[in-house]
Image (tube, rainbow, N blue to C red):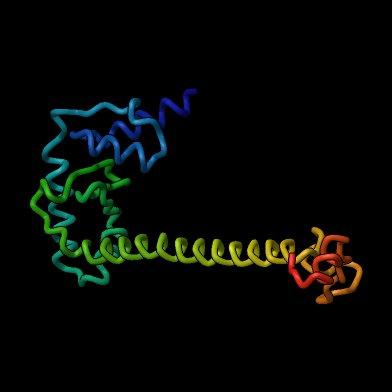
Length: 185
């Protein structure tokens, strides 16, 4: 219980200033958001210093290296509902990049790639599901055809005569009588 309270106190030290920041911290640390409180009067100098550091790293980095360089400085960038947040686990700081005037275009291409991959994954699953359903329908049709052909429910012709051989059906008296008269029943 004490560990849990200490952990929540440490997470609260990030001083989330909005519900979005509170929800993001809860998601990152896998706790219920109700345990965190929004701090309306956070430390603006701490956030400004962190924002300046992030701006400097972004300006000095290439598009491919920006996340690695931020990671080296102790920052992670998270996206939540189209808004980007920087989190420093060293300084216990969280802030919105948009609110600090930091351009987020450098991160959007990676997000777009992830969204495309996430959109493609359900398509692949749908295609696989469709193939499976089609295969099951074909199989059911084959089994149904085997039963309709008179296999007597013995697995589509694999009964006493061996695989692929049809059983010879005995004609009823009515059929024999009908053939003699030229009818087909």
